[in-house]
Every structure is written in C-alpha cells, then in structure tokens.
Length: 123
Length: 143
Image (cartoon, rainbow over all chains, first blue to last red; front, side, top):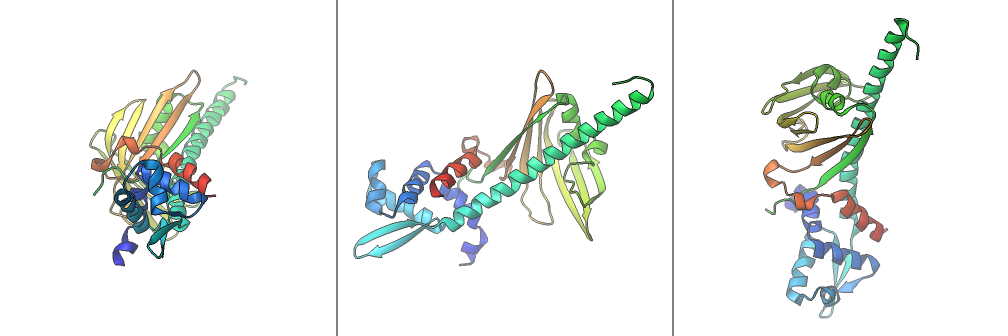
C-alpha cells in the first residue's frame, strides 16, 4: 500500500510507455472487454495480454471485474487524469516562462527606442 | 527499472529578437534575473550563473516569507543554438531534471523549443519523446 502511494505517476507513465498498452486503453475507452478480447487484435497469447493488463491494473488505469471464469477490464480514468494534469502543469510553467522572457526583450526594445528617440531620432 | 518511461514536456515559442539575444537572456544574470524562475509577486534575491559547461546556477526568489532556490548545472552551451542544463528545486524534490533549449534562427527573430525531461540524465531515452501528444491522443479517446 505504501508503495502504491509512493510513486503512482512513475507507475502510470511506465504503463503508458508501451504502445500495446496504449492501444489497449484506447479500445477500453469504447467499452469493457474481456482479456481474450483485448488480446485478439494484437496476435498475442492470453498470458501476454494478461501481463499487460496487470501492469495497467497496478498503475490503476484499469479495473478488473471477475465473472465466473472470465475477467472483464474496464477503464479507470483517475490515474490518467493525474498524469495529464502533472504534464499540463509543466507545460503551462514553461509557456509562462517563455512569455515572460519575450516581455523582457520587448521592454528592452521599447526602452532602447525611447532613449534613441530622445537623442533626436524619430520613429 | 525501465529506462525512459518518465515523461517529456515540450513547448515552442517564436521570438522577434535574434537567436543570440534570446540565447544570452538565459545566461546573463541581469536579464535572466528578470524572468527565469520569476513569478509576478516574487522578488529575486539571488542570481548566480557560472556560464560554462560544468558550471552551476543558483536562482533564488522570495515568495512571501519563503525563499525558493532553483539550481542546476550547465551540460552544454553552444551559442546561440543549444543550451542544456540540469534543473531542480531541492526544497521540493531531490530529483534533478534536464532542460534542453534549442534555438533556430529565422529570417526575422528565432524559434525556441524547450524540452523538459522529467528524468535523471542516465534514464533519458529519446524514443519516448512527445508525451503530451501521446496523452492528448489518449485523452481524446477517453473523453
């Protein structure tokens, strides 16, 4: 449990780093699927699909429902939203930084134009 | 431990100023102190920049009663096209991340692309670039 709290984002990004798992999530966005259904388009064994499902489950991107002998997977979007939010924070941070730099350079230009204007040059 | 699984953020900005001037704004303490890691309500109290490869920077801004220290080391300085440095805020995290600033001169001004790798340098893996695009695409599907 402590481990689950310690690095959830690392785990989410690790889960999302694999293209097969991302494709699985896209399919799950449409509807709940069994592990067999998830495996089918990737020409992979049930065991291989099950491994991917486990990684997604540990990242809390997916929830499993067991019905008889079948395991059904459903999307759990909360972790995903956290990952997007984290990246958006940095994206906004740097966008703001570059806008601030731009403003500093423009202010310098305006100041330079004013001081050269004072020397008798217009425009 | 799987390398390269931590995300990368990339932003681009077009400047009217020439590449050299934009590049120097990162390393000249007087200019950098006016914007780099500055917030609208904070007050810059310390800007130390040792602008050479292996040199360190320390930029401290006072926000309310709190001093926030940003520090890092320059890994590559190639005026005016490329600047790479590590970056961390020791108060918040022991992690050092990596920032790469690429500047392309244009007919007028220049275009700056900043890549922030939320990874330790040894875990960097270029094949995992574009996290925002990957997530945006997924998010669109999930919406």
